[in-house]
Image (tube, rainbow, N blue to C red; front, side, top):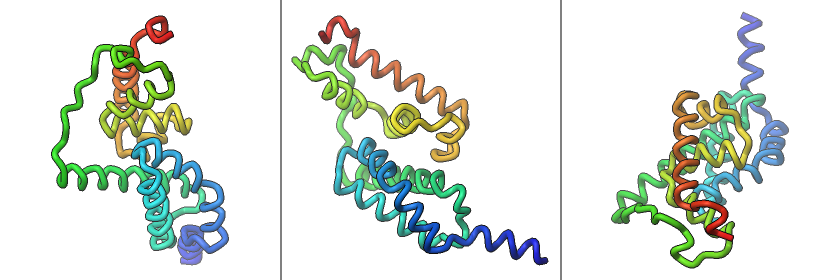
Length: 173
């Protein structure tokens, strides 16, 4: 019985551990949200919501797994927000043009940003977690609730779509 109580004590997050989680992961969580939503205000709201949920569920969160818990919560919050906004507005066609240069773009970062915006939310999320935040396939699977194989497929398809959208570097330069 004593061992069980000690294990339960390890799950309860204290104020110092919570503050450490804020210090360590708030910026990365904000960047992840901002890259996915493209909106600074909603990204701040997502981060705030994640830490509010963390505080409310601190008895059930292992302080060693708080990073994964926060990113999983952020992912689910973004997905919920997207579903809600889709119900409120009419979704436009998501057709990808043959080449970005047809639009006269000359800023590579702008082209890449536009290309990423053309991805589905799941594709964008897994691609950003892998390439921008540096998570492993297994960690991305835990965060998004996908299998490791599904994560790999989404990342592969995302990269193919980006390649087709951007075209070759020779055309851009």
